Length: 422
Image (cartoon, rainbow, N blue to C red; front, side, top):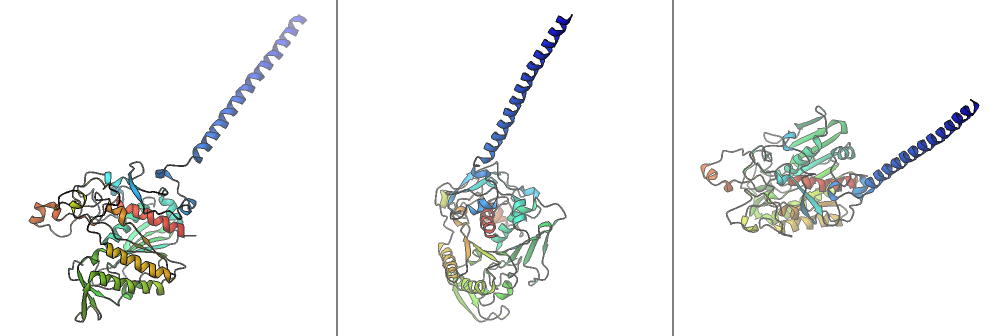
C-alpha cells in the first residue's frame, strides 16, 4: 500500500514538472508573439509614407523649406482625392458646382500635385483649423480668388459640427447696392475666412460685387483706401488681380468716379504697373508685417483656344476630361508680361524689407484644361439662341469646378501659412 502511495506521489511530481514546462513554453510563445507584433507596429509606423499619405505635422511643413512646391507634375490619385464632396459643401455657388449642373465625369477631381523635390503633407482639416486658431484669413481680389476662397471653406467646413459655423455678409462694408465682404466663421476655433471683392485692387467701376459686367474699365488710380481699410486686421492676406486687366486699354481717373471727365487712356500693362505701385506702397506702410503674412496668387490659365493643345482653333475646354501631359505646356491666353510685372513689384517690395510671397500657380494650372466648368455651371443671364446652338461660345474656361484645381492651390498656400505660424 505504501509502495503504491509513493508511486502516486512520484507521478504527481512528474505531472507537475511536465505541466510547468508546458506553461513555461506557452508563456514564452505568447511573449514572443507580443514582442513580434509590437516590433511590427513600430516598423510600420516608422516606414516613410508615400507622397499621397504623408502625415500632417509642423515638422513636415518645416521640412518643405527650400523645396520649390510649384515645380512638379499632376498625378492621378483617386484614393486621396477629392478632399470633399460637392454635394456635402453647401457653400459652393452655381458657377463652380459642375456636378450639380450636369457634368457627369469626376476624374478632374482626383488629381494630386506632386512637387519634384518633396511631398506635400496629407490634408487634415482638424489639424489645420487647430493651427489657425484665433486667426483671420482674407482673400482679396476677383472671381478666381473667390473660387479659391470657396474651395478652402469647403476643405475645412466638413469637420465643423452644424451650428458651430456660419457664412454671412458683413453689412458694415457697403457698395452701391450690395456688400463686398463675405465671411465664414468656425466658432470653436475662432477662425474667420473672408473674401473681399476688389478685382482691380483700387477703386474702379467694377467694384459692385454682382453688377460689374463692364467693357469700359475705369480705375480711380489714387483711391485704394476705400477698399484697403477693410484689410488691415487680417492675420493672412491673399491677393490676386489679373482677369480684369485683359482689355487692351483702361481709363485712369484722377477725380472721383462720380466726376469721370478727367482721365487718361493707357494700355492695360501700364495701368497694371501703376496700380501695383499704389498697392505696394499701401502694403508697405499700412500692414504690420510682424503679425500679417501676405501672399499674391499668380495668374491662372484660361483654356479658350483648343489649338494650343492640338484641337481645332474654334474648340476650347468644353468636353475636356484629361490634363495636358506635355511638360512646360503654356496656353496662349496667359499674359507673361503681366506676370513679370507682378514679380518685379514683389521683388521691389522685398528689397524694402516687405516679403509678399508670390504663389506661382500659373504653370500647374496650364496643364488643367479639364478642370473648368465649361457649360456645366449656373449662368445668371439668359443664354441666347446663337449661344445654345454652339455651346463652346459660352463655355466658361476661366473659373474652376469644385472640388478640383483650387483645392491644390490651397494646399500649397497652407503649406506656407502654417510654416509661418510659430
